[in-house]
Structure formats: structure tokens, C-alpha cells
Length: 387
Image 1 (cartoon, rainbow, N blue to C red):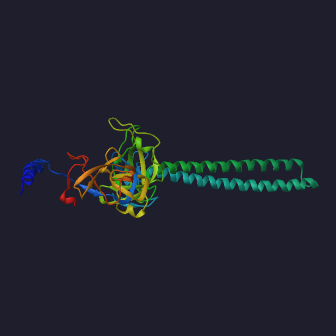
Image 2 (image 1 turned 60 degrees about the vertical axis):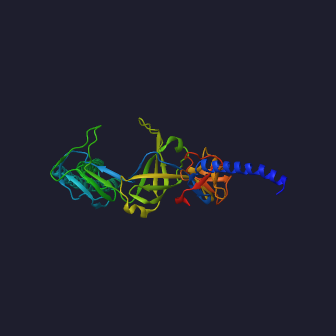
Image 3 (image 1 turned 30 degrees about the horizontal axis):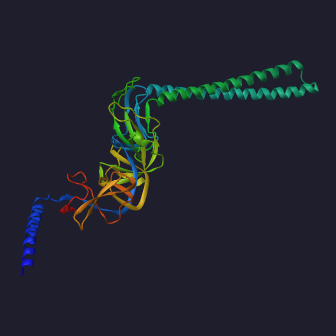
């Protein structure tokens, strides 16, 4: 080695040593890579939805809490809790022998009045025919004027008596109606097909109607199990976007693995202002498939998602990966680092957000963006369970 080569070597050697020491210091003092959870950018459906703010309730389309309009002693109770009944079936009857006797008496009096009216009208018909005969004879001079006038007057009087008798029959029938109405007040009749949910009372017990302004338990609670809907409160901010007939999804705590299709059937006409709670609007969502009614019970807690808009087969990412509605962190597997990316979004819900520009299918976005150390160009590795 000549003198020049030795001189160059003496200069290079310290530089290499210093570089090696610097690399070693950087390698052993650099921060550990951040563990990130990633999800792929992929195509799928994204919906814009609004959901209830508090749990909704499954309601029967028809439910009648029935009680007699008068007080009395229960004489007949032909049904029990859980029975299925048909419209028009007797559910409960109070002791009513006195009212039944009054109704029978009114029926008898009506029958007597009708018979008297028939007799009176028959007499009027005979008198009318006699008057017509004498009028004909009067024209030929075979009957006197006085005799003819008496016959005509009698016919008119008997016709008036017939009309009065008919009016009496009508009054008697109306009295029968009053008696039967009083009798009907002692009976509870099923207004529709349904299931007996509750009975408050036993044979020979007394029931009394609710005083004005004071609610008392119904004697019979009847539920129509052929139709159900969900009534759920929607925040007033979201309620303005909800419209009748919009498609909906219904989920129930009782059926955690299922969702039911629904349709908005009614939006309340006023806002509920409850103390210490946000103002809400009640929205009613009906089940659209009759087969879903088979296992439902009135009173189940339920949640609804009203679908305002939907995009099928669009580019989407988990909503939790989006920051400020316009930024994401993309994991670059070939560089083991993350990169901040600006994006433009479309429809969004709590689960997925539509991406219109800024990402491509197959790229990996970071979803645990709240982890300490997440920053543009940060060194990162994917957590083992998400590889």
C-alpha cells in the first residue's frame, strides 16, 4: 500500500467507525414501532340511517283494556288469561237479573203495543171501506148526507188512532233498546280477535268503574297478536329527515341474532319535551312480514334504524378510521409505516363510511386512530390478531 492509499484509509476508517456508532445508537434508541389495527378498503353497501335515542317498545296494533261502564258483581267469567278469543265473544258479565227482567218486560210491552196497533189499524181499514161505500151511495141518493158524514168522520178518527198506535209501538221498541243497552253495559264483549293478556277480578267479586281522572286496572286486557309495530323516540335533529314509508330495520334484545324488516308507518305530530332528556319525536315502524309476528310479544324492547339513503357496491371503510370527516391513516406494508391521507366521503353511518376519492380498494386503513403515537410517517406494525 503506497503512501497516498494509506492516507486515504486513515481518513475513511474514522468516518466508517463514526457512521457505525451512529447507526447503532439510532437503531437501539429509536422508538418501538406502533402496533396498529387495520382494515382493508373494499366495496360494499353503505347506508345513511337514523336510529332511536332510547329503547323503543313493541306495541300491538290493537290492544283494548276493557272494563264495565257500571259497577257490579261478576256473575260470569268464561275466559282465563292466555285464552284466544274471537270478536263478539263474551268475556265477562256482571249480575244483571234485574236489568234482564226489565228488558223482558219491555219486550212484552212492545209486543202488546204492536198487537193493539194492528187491531186499531184493522178497524181503521174497515171504517175507511165503509166511508167509501157510503160516499158512492150518496152520489146516487141511496144514502143520507148525515149518515155519510158520520162514516167519513169515524174513518178519519180511526185512521188517527192507527197512527197513534204505530207511534206507541215505536216508543215501545225504543224502550226495549234502552233496556237492552242497560243490559249490555253489564257485559264485556271482545271487540276483535285476540289473546287475553290480563284479568283483574274473580267470580262474585265486585268491580267498579274508574273515577274520573283516576286510572284503575282494566277488568280484561285484550291484545291482537296478528299485527305489531315498534314505537321509538328519534332525536328532533334527525326526525326531520324521516318520512312515512321509508324502509327500516328492527332489532330486539329477545332476538339478538336477527333483524326484522320494517316500514315507517307514522311520525308523531308533536315533539316530546321530557325533563332532563333530549327532545324527541315518536316514530312508529311496522313489521312488513307477517311471519315475524309469530314469536313477538307486546312490550319487548326494540331498536329501529330508518334507512334514509343507500349505496350498493361502493368503496367503503370503517367509520372509526375517519378523523374529522376527511382524514385517514393508511398502513404501507412494504415500508412498515403509516401515512396520513385526505379523503372525500359520501354516505356514512356508525359502521361504514363511503369513500369517493383518496383511497383505492385493497389499501389498509388504521382503525385504532386514538392510539398514542399515531402520526404521519410513524413506524408501525400490524397487530398479530389482525394480520
